[in-house]
Structures are given as C-alpha cells and as structure tokens.
Image (cartoon, rainbow, N blue to C red):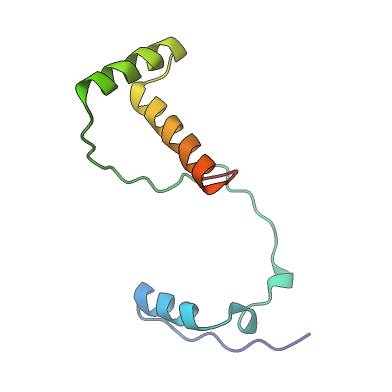
Length: 93
C-alpha cells in the first residue's frame, strides 16, 4: 500500500479548485478505499433563466404539453434535454 501525500488546507473554494486543476488526485487520495453510496434525494443544481420566445411557439408548446398532460415548461426541459443528448451523443445530461 502506497503512502499518500498530505492534503494541504484550503482557505477558499477557489484555492482548492486551483490546486486540483494542477495536481493529480491519485497522489493524495486512495480510491481503492472508496465505497459506493446512493444519494436518492440529491437534486441537480437548477438555474433560472429568462428566455424570449415567439408567442406562437409558446402556444404550440402549451398544446403539446396539454396533450401529454405535463406543464409546458417541463415539456420544454424534456425537449431541450433530448436535443442536447442527441447533439452530444450522450445517454445522460
């Protein structure tokens, strides 16, 4: 078993970010000792944005959303997520 380097103390999140962007974490952490955990209540960070759309597009979205029995803003998130996955060839976003 190799001995890991001692982690420095960080005075800020920015300082820690700068450290990890320049150092290999395997020299400081023993990943073989890690354990899988489930975080069922973890929610992704959400940021509100303001988006200007043509009124006709919003009306079409509301019609589709009504047919699918979901709020139109939720439908917009679904559509955006699907498109981003397609464009980036991802399975999760």
